[in-house]
Image 1 (cartoon, rainbow, N blue to C red):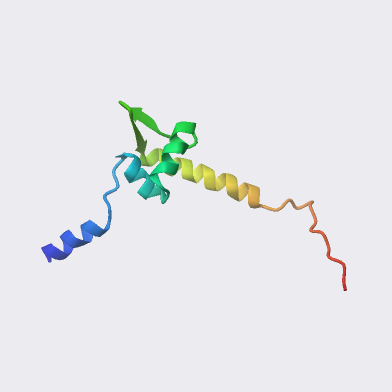
Image 2: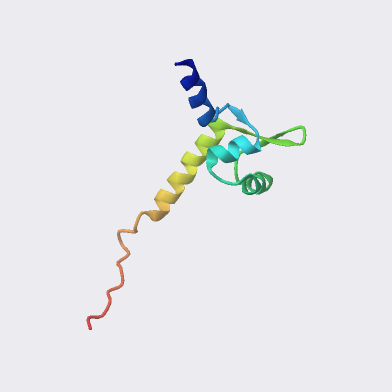
Length: 89
């Protein structure tokens, strides 16, 4: 039983509250290079500890919630806007 538990822990990466760029990129499902660019531009919440980027999981979760809310609001159709009608052939 112990061996299967140890093996299953290897398959699921540990998610810490403060993550380095590799852990955070795995968590977000993007490449480390892309995350580095986003952090440098201030697009994602991040902070530097020394000269290394660090990411708080709770702040990333809040940021993702806000991003999804913004995209959902943009995707909602305007009730006063009508779709163009294609002419019958």
